Amino acid sequence: MPARYIRTQKKRKRRKPLKPERSIRDTALGLLSRREHTRLELTGKLKAREFPATEIEALLDDLQREGLQSDARFAESYVYSRTQRGFGPLRIRQELQVRGVTESLVSAHVDFNDPQWLQLACQEYAKKFKDLRVASAKERARRMRYLQNRGFTGDIIRQTFVRFERAETASGAGA
Image (cartoon, rainbow, N blue to C red; front, side, top):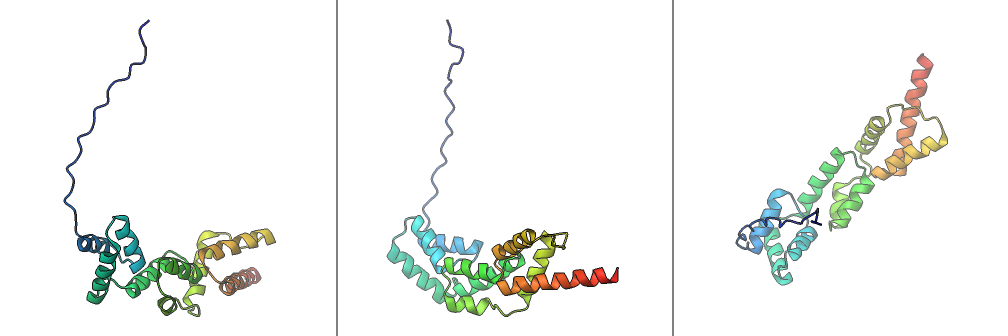
């Protein structure tokens, strides 16, 4: 009885010739040309490419001295980017700390008293919840968790709810 299923040899792809090895400086500059990186991120990426730790530290010192790598520049662009995506100050601060930005740089770029955070929280709330009325305590808690997960402080969340409740009562009184 002949076999029904006969395995055939798959054609093997021809391997591409290996690229010439890049120097540690070229690799770091390639990474920095795509986006800003913190010193910690660059260290991790260069270690993953198996460059020696002593060379990495020396290179990063040179790049900082030349102004090609800057944690302050990274923090500024990161805060702007995350703010544009609707994230609050707590989450942005935590993400910067995870990426190795010092507390002094974080506090310089993330001001908790800035009124933009309340405005941003209101925009995110209105975008997520088309029906601004809160029907139950459970629904209110769900909406509060949403803003909390976005990184807004408890005070900003409370002010957001107060602002929308006022707008709802004002529109309800006019009707």
